[in-house]
Length: 120
Image (cartoon, rainbow, N blue to C red; front, top):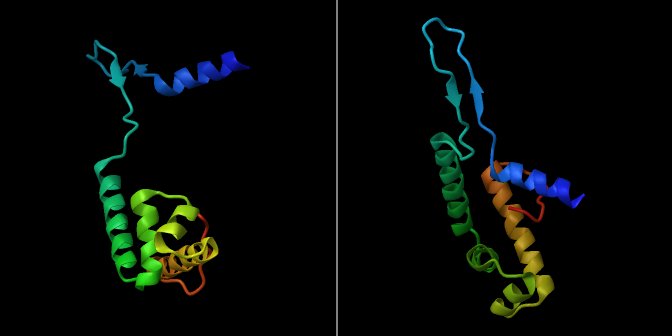
């Protein structure tokens, strides 16, 4: 089982290159097609726009909801440490983060009723 997993890991780190021969007349060499696993410029622009929109929406939150979100984004601390930094209980920090996510989802998606998970 470990050998099979190692083979799969190697395949992920060393992607295969597809070489196809062209059937066009006068094509002496096969064409080489290499896929770029990265995101394209259009996707990068979309990600930046969404991120800027999210930061703008966070900035409009009331301060008691904005603080735990900013701490979580900036420092990626566990809930206990966020509560300690704000001098509130863990339950209060959890509640504020949930309310902030709900407000952000409403602002960003323009929906009245939104289900918010633990992930951004």
